[in-house]
Amino acid sequence: MKQKTALLVIGIIALCGLLFSGYLSYNELFSGGCNLNFISCGTRTGPIFGLPACVYGFFMYLTVFIIVVLGLRKKS
Image 1 (spheres, rainbow, N blue to C red):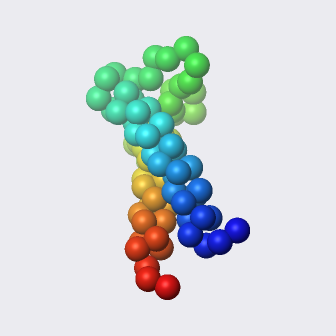
Image 2 (tube, rainbow, N blue to C red):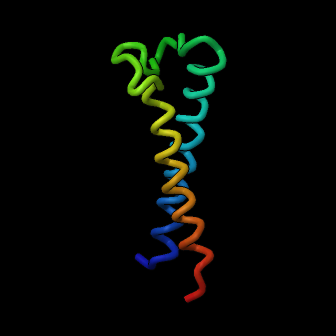
């Protein structure tokens, strides 16, 4: 697999994770909690350093996505 193809695959996965964790983070922080039947965001385990786990996931996926974008912009 070429480097560009691998970065594109990782970027797509990171973008999906970014959208999902962003949705959960928004619901948890601004809509009064994740009251969804299929998923819960930090309600069982409690907050970590005052924030739900989905917020940390959002920033981790954002970091990976930024690294992928920078890797794809690099001229080789």
